[in-house]
Length: 231
Image (tube, rainbow, N blue to C red; front, side):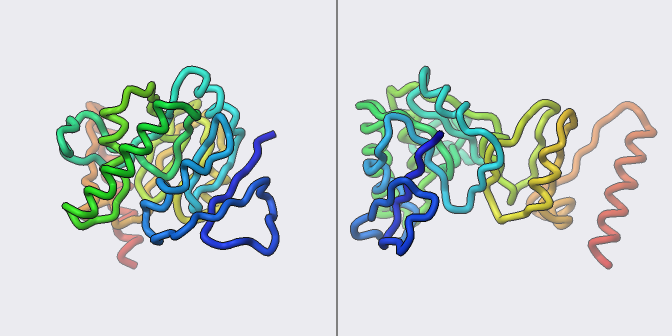
């Protein structure tokens, strides 16, 4: 069994499925509130989840990894340029799900994250918490692990899940039909959130194969989808 803790801005009339409910004092109602809530974690090993995540499979694997690592996270699907000396190849983490174990190294990492977040607000005028999370992890002495995308599946972006990949947590707008299809075992799964991403600014379609039959097939599929979108 896994105990569940909720950090919120107001008491609940009914604690519902939560084993612990803790109140975040003086929230600012911005992404940085999650950083303020991390010291309230009650457990030696924790899995932080945003409120737009949905658990669809067993979570014990996250906690098993914390036997060997201080923090585990998945990359944000899009990529960013170098940030405050962090190399471009050190991709930005998604801050909506990460596993961590209690200790001096993670306490310092989160303290540095808070400092970096406040600095980015002050100097860059934005409240995105992920650039400062990226910098804090890069400069930390903690032992970190990058999870595969199916451990934090961002459904507002295109994705590919390989043959044996089992989706653990879906992160994005609720879509029960999609979740059911993700459970199909033994198949690759490819997803585009909208037809606009076939030829919009977000995505350019690339198909490379020496087999002319498959190349024609792919082009035909794209034409059908574009026609369907226009209707």
